[in-house]
Length: 357
Ligand code: DP6
Image (cartoon, rainbow, N blue to C red):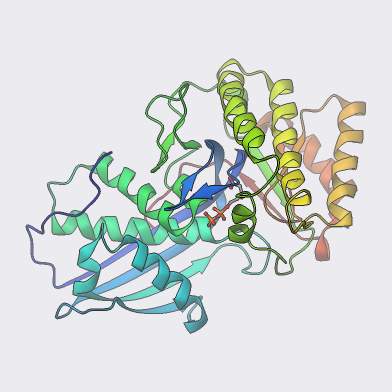
């Protein structure tokens, strides 16, 4: 494995500010099941999103080496001490690779483009933004470090914060998890899908229907852990890896009907794992099923290439190619918004990952 341990600073940096905007992502083949330290049980692939993102600025100030990581956290302009334990845990996991975090006090300012309690996972965009700020400081401390290496390291660090965050550094398609058919793939970090993608999958649309904005009853972390003694686990991990082989071909050849079938099956299988865990749980809501049935009905009578996917929650991600944007959005407005809490939805599309702002 590449050595991600920071070696030595060649420059003295007293004060620095780095800021990054990183997106959320939506998995097509799902990551569900992991081992320590945040290693996936199967490979996954996602579309990087564009409009759903986190903006994070970190102000670094050099201090005498401390035995604890010193930081303050502001979320949307307000001090947020209740978010600190999660970030502290993240720093603890990455301290071996970024020993310089003990030499700085950090003030972190963060904001999301989407409502905090929308059910849209903010851990992917949140962790990847912090990871990018750290690797920017690293570049300042040692300008000789290669940019590709630092991009990989950002994904590696983000993964230690939240598995899916490893897929939020680049875009528009990212694979995380070692897989024989994806050259360069690794369990340690995400890589850009390395093959040429058919134009039908360019600028793909994802309209996120906010079916339920409440706090999830079961967190992803608990869900992942329930895969340890799950009766169908091994079969599922194999299926996901097989699906990755299939989707790689589908994306290159532009076989959109096969894409629809595979992506919807992945979403339902993810939730089937939840339904069959011990203890079992359900994250879908009645309106999740209403939306799915409406999408199927519309597809069968219109020949549209609309499809859906789900993450670990009740919201529905409606996926469609850019050339169907107008008609699908008319359908969404007319038929689906009534199933959203307060008619709320977010129209997004695939993006290219982290950017400065
Ligand atoms: C259903 O990345 O949120 O969205 O690694 O414990 O932070 P942790 O879990 P997380 O799990 C994401 C699960 C998923 C599928 C996916 O994004 O691949």
